[in-house]
Length: 157
Figure 1 (cartoon, rainbow, N blue to C red):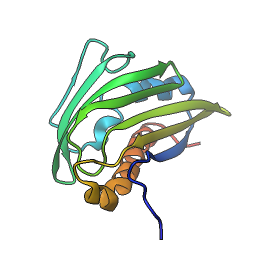
Figure 2 (tube, one colour):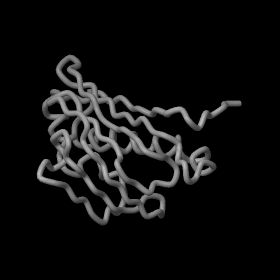
Figure 3 (cartoon, one colour):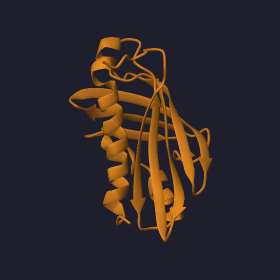
């Protein structure tokens, strides 16, 4: 039996090998909405002048996933072109995970790239039982969908 410590951050990640160079992967991954398409039926995506690409840039999303309405505000906290980007929640009403930091890293791999999409998340304080039931599944689903967006755009190695 696995014991889940509710105060400890959790991590999910997914690695994908792509037959394009890191600048192409990074450019796609930072394009507005390319990786956030996993929030199905997104109703709105708003960004400030940094368009979600610069450190300090804000991103706001409203949408639906698994039939639940979602609202997120995120801020970009790290960006090294063309190798990485990270962002974190500053306001959200997610049900199965709490606040998170999410990002991607791209590294050269032969004639292509290795893309790692990751999320470090807290369990939800408002719904701890739902977090235990669905938090890990939701976080895994997010990184899988974000990796699939890149895999759908570029050929595999």
